Image (cartoon, rainbow, N blue to C red):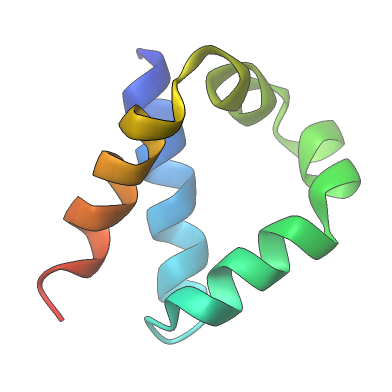
Length: 66
């Protein structure tokens, strides 16, 4: 799996768990960043390797159907 897929899959999972609320998703990730990095080290690696633009594109693709 590549970095974009890892990042996308995790963001989409959290987005679904927070009832498709992007604000709650971002807040959850920011608040629990240390725990997430321990739980999902591949997400930390993906987040580090992707540019802000790439991350924004991934998030945009996840939220645009709504």
